[in-house]
Amino acid sequence: MTENHTKLQPSGLRNLRAYQLAKKLAHVVYDSTSTFPKSEYRLISQMRGAAVSVYGNIAEGYGRNAIGDYVRFCEIARGSQSELGSYIEFCKERKLLKPADEAQLLELYNHTWNTLGALLRSLKEKKLDGSWDRTYKATQEDRELYDA
Image (cartoon, rainbow, N blue to C red; front, side, top):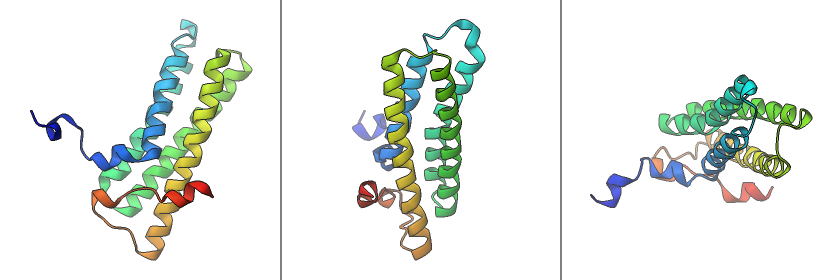
């Protein structure tokens, strides 16, 4: 089997930092919640669902290949991430997180938040000025926005 058949498409999506970070955040949420008491099954489910929704919505918007849809789904992802943030805050208050997990979650959450914000700003600018290239290969974050 050739390498093209072993990689998921579109490959450009998997190169997006916002997507990569959101996916990593979902894995960290899964790992962190695996030590929660079984009685917290609803909270575990809500946190995991919100975390997976972040990168899932980035992917769905990207796959629509229309700038308006892409922006809308990234905004939905941002909403799911806000939901996840409220759960993380609650878990901190209830001392459900191990200190190392808490630190990792907070750092990755904030990094993902800022990167997704940069992607949204980039997409909105491209939508306004008409510079968005509708090919999958051209859809990517503007690196200079990360330094803002």
